[in-house]
Amino acid sequence: WEEFIRELVYEKEFKKLGIVCTKEELYDQMLVHPHSIVVSQFRDQQTQQIAKEFANPDGSLNVRELNKLVSQFKPEQDEMWGNLETYVQQSRLMEKYSALIKGGLYTTSVEAKMNYAVQATSYDVRFVLKKYTDIPDANVKVTEEDIQTYYNEHLYEFQNDIPSRSIEYVTWDVVPSKADIDTLNNELSRIAAEFRKTAADEDAAFTVAENDGRADTTSSLKEKMSPSIPDSFYTSPAGTVYGPYNENRTYKVIKIRGTEQINDSAKVRHILISVPNERNPNIKRSVAQSKSLADSLTALLKKDRKRFDEFVEKYSDDPGKTKPNIKQNPQVLMNTQVFPNPKDTNNYTGKGGNYGWMKESSRFVESFKDYGMKGKKGDIGVVPSEFGFHIMEVLEVSKTTKTKYKIATISRELKPSDITRQDFMQKASDFAGQNNTAEKFQKAVEAQKLNKRLHEDLKENDPFIPGFQNPGESPKEMIRDVYKGKAGDVIPPRIIGERIIVVLITKTRERGPSELEFVKDDITNKVRDQKKAEIIINDFK
Image 1: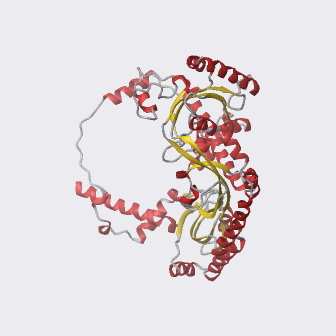
Image 2: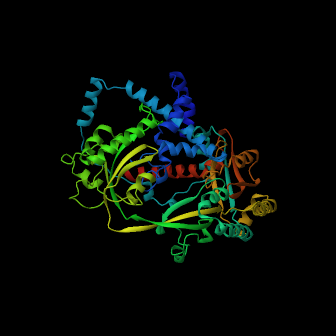
Image 3: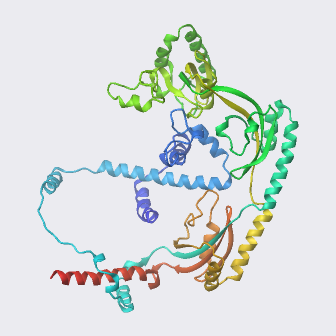
């Protein structure tokens, strides 16, 4: 409905008023200063926080990571991104239009007096109420003649401006076969044997070669790794290989390259010297000049650390450096403390560049976090990141430490093979061919205990069919097939993503008055309510 209103009403107004969203503006709203619609795609639905891998230290969306993600999109993801661009563009047009209306509306003094009079006047009333639901439906008889009469007299209510179809459909998940699993296990077992022979200094190159050009050498805590990995692996010497094992339909082979001890938690403060990039277009110095400034300030701080607060105020480009006003808002202190220690005045964001205590799970860029997790109390140095150069000082570290395991990983996603996909497609084709009428379709669904779904209002330009809304699941070809058919047709199967769909067209609705069968239930309810109203009115007389 909103799409219908936009096309028929708003687009004409946009053209008349010259409201546009240029390509340059759209690019800015998508990739430079992302629109709230774009940002929302990266938020956790429960916590409303930006996903860790796309978050800045302050919790905002990391534009560089966003651009990197978009540059690596596959064709189906490009299509999804294009749909999002259209949505953002339409939102920007509506925002501009709303702003114009808001700026052009005002309340006159006469209207203000009238509004005041209406709001200031009240009446005492008494009333009785009897609901339609107080009368059982079984007590009201609605005949076919009643329905036909209402339909004839109210055809204007049932005008259909956009053709639609009602469909029923069944689906099959295309899942890997045992042969697919065995093939993948054999391939990774062969790789594991080679991995054991690989020298430590060649591990990274080996992961690049076996992961389609992607290096995968990381450090991780035991609790962050798969529970499928046995405890014995963590006490094994460097060079030990484990796998293949299954982790969420991804089969992996891992190699332990060593261990390192990190602080359980650490408290740091920093001064951010930004570098020129798309986020900081106003930075005039070069990257080399930014590094030189960071080195110079670090040298001064090593001689006199009491100047840290002074340098934060004078040089830091971190917008989070502002000190909260505890006197005006004591809630700030309570909300921003990471560890419950009210006597720790450094333990809130902004105090001299302080971010309080952080842990391995804290949402900071890796280089920033690593400096605290691996550092010692009193360490001070320059740490590069995508934001620039951080002059970091470790203020405190926990007495306890944790072990991180240096791991190299080879991974393969478990997918159905072409043969498996063909087998499932043949099964669906047999179903559609043998059950090519509405009656046969319904009987087969019941006999095979398939999960049948219904959709009553499928438009030709709908972007999805309910249940097929994930990235890479575009049902446009199937929708086109449906619109080529007629009521009662069983449409041959289509494979969409990792599922196959077979559709039965139950009804077709063309432009003009809706056929009675489409609106019969609605009319029945309306006629019944009319008859109940007559009963209630007679009761009140």
